[in-house]
Length: 305
Image (cartoon, rainbow, N blue to C red; front, side, top):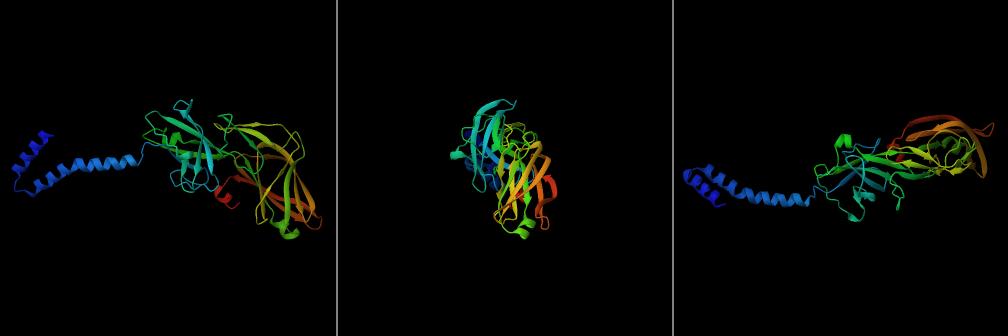
């Protein structure tokens, strides 16, 4: 430091009458102080702490703010750069506060130079027995799985501390338009799907592989499933275990009377919306299916549920 002061004084002496010399002196003297202050601010930004951004295929770009409307929590598992499981995240719960995702209980994970990846699922299940297979069932739960987009953003480490997780729907989303029936018959009090062929059922239970989306089916049963009614009465929906072939009846109760319609040999596609456009023949007093359309699962449309 003494050496630098000596050199500085020599420069001042040489440029004694120059305004430039004064400016140079100020910069040289204040530079180290400004750098020290800046370093303190950067430390408080916690640049090396693990961060999480969650999106889905249809809803948003992962570089934007987190706005997924329905997911409240997810579970995380971690992998090293080679794909082997690590203990950094072992069914770690992350929660959404309406604006950002945080690890439960305010946990912070400081990252080093070792690279890792993460895979996720939703909704979170405490005490999940497997780090690969998630139990799922037909009903009112939208099971999803996802993984950090490593090919787009690179591995996670102190230089790239953000996990950009893209969530994928695993279930078949059955959506029924009930408006023609409600307009002709009145308020619908109940709607359900009931299996009719044990060799081609809508599966009640299954297991979802969190790494690749594979489905491992449970037992075949002649089960029935209550659909979720929208408050308006215009629509009902069900999240079903996907399958290649199923046969079932649609049962609707209006004013205490049961109406039934058969659906034969239909595939229920995972990550797709199967739209059933139902109608009612007043002369014959029976339900009929006007159309079935299958489309990619649009999360923006799902907000209306």
